[in-house]
Amino acid sequence: MAMRLLPSLREKKRYLAFKIISEGTVSRRDFVDELARSASSLLGDQGSSKCGLKVLSFDREGGIIKCERTKTAHTRAVLATINRVGGVRVAVHVIGSSGSVKGAGRFAETGGA
Image (cartoon, rainbow, N blue to C red):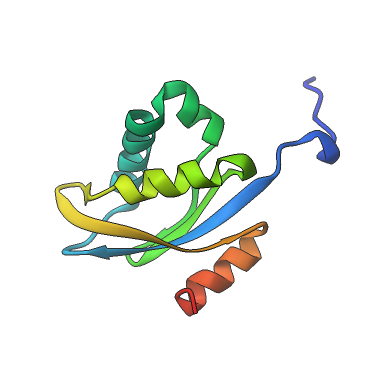
């Protein structure tokens, strides 16, 4: 049986709410693939694995990404480098950052206001 870390020893997470402006529809699978490709290209394999990127929610207008708290700036840079997803031109903008999923969801609902 694997031992679990105590909550005080775990790395803290950040949740980034983002919106997508695109010329067409973007699927979740294509976005996740492009996110991994951009992270690997910008940060390298080791750097992208240290970011711990995970797409928690996604719809055609945006979503929420989880990352390590110390790698928030790197995650923002990776999102900024995405300009094409599945052959569709896109722009990805981070509209808010939070320490909880609920807080990031509020950013996503209000559109960053």
